Image 1 (cartoon, rainbow, N blue to C red):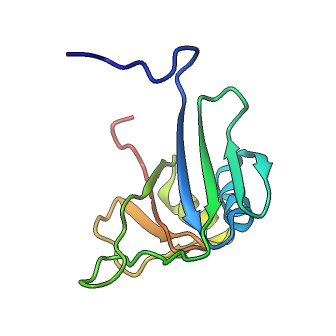
Image 2 (image 1 turned 90 degrees about the vertical axis):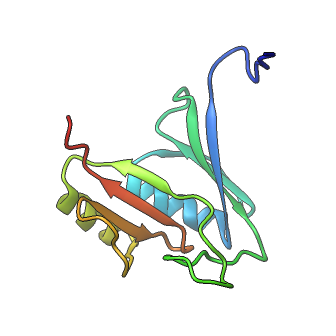
Length: 132
């Protein structure tokens, strides 16, 4: 089996979310996570916990963006991915997410997870790791 090294200097992971306004969505996630925005303009923004974290969230303005439907419905734009964030306290995390502009999804499939929609309609989840 051949293994391709994608990056040799460091390990890095980035997730890019398309949205109608990159700057606005980056500021929402900045408030939600407390991370720092490192680059932003009308078409692109990214944030991370630090410049050397090795991972970030980025946002790309897409003029033809269509928000996903949660839960999925036949014939409608489905969710292709979602973000999960571990919190220490689910009630406190829920309150914080709502205060910074998230919407609690109507459909909640698990009692120990909260599903939210960000301002662009992307689902994301807050959960508590009961094993720790």
